[in-house]
Length: 350
Ligand SMILES: [Zn+2]
Image 1 (tube, rainbow, N blue to C red):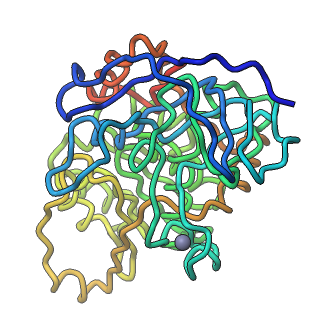
Image 2: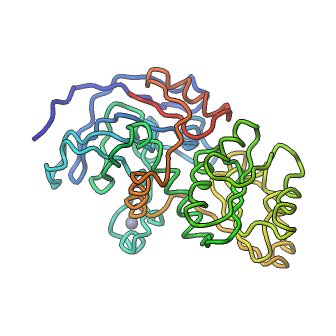
Image 3: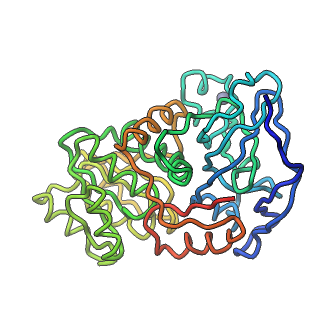
């Protein structure tokens, strides 16, 4: 059973790097699924900082241009390539953003994000910022029931990233204190909720009163204004001078110094994203005298997304949709994410 498929589709395309004007809205042939792949009609996609990096370019890194950006998406399977069971046609799905070889040691032990050939939709192959996308059939995850397309699309990348950072890297335990830096970011808003599920006391920072009150609604016990230069001192006060057992970093150079100050003896800092820059100074003496561990993290195990979407289905984790734009307004959607005046995810609907 194959569904009627148009010949062409609307897509956002990056042909060369630059500002929002470099995002072209084009008509392209609807792609054909290769062997082992499926064609998915996108009902909603969500922006991540990766979309901005793909558009702007990253010095020293080459993206395969032209490329359709977009790593998160949810939709309906409309056709299958060779070797894929036709029964999946018509399924409502969310897409795992990571693509890997499926054959190497990393893939076979479940660490597909450590695959030597790991890639991400919209970064290494055409992504979800279009009416249709082809993905390997192994990237399909059943869409949670009772969740809107927008919420389903806004969930995978940030949920997977935050979960991997908190559970597989920092190994956050019940009763510990978690400090989430920038609770208004996609990963931050997820980390606040996960900290609660895992039984931690959650402290959260944000740069505006509006974001701090939203962080409280999500389950942060106390919020801290990280635009105040000395906010690390605040964390010490709130933890009886001990500091946080786990510091969840995703801002980078702007917050690093205070993140180091905020971590407890024997504590862990886990970092991703570095949205304000990745160059920081590090005093090794502070690191070893305080027995601090620092973990870098990006993406996570595709298998974990299957359980995380079930947590979303049960209402234990919520994707926070800040704003929704039609695909025709993709430039405004990018500008909204870049403005930083946003709590949660920016969603685009083709
Ligand atoms: Zn592999």
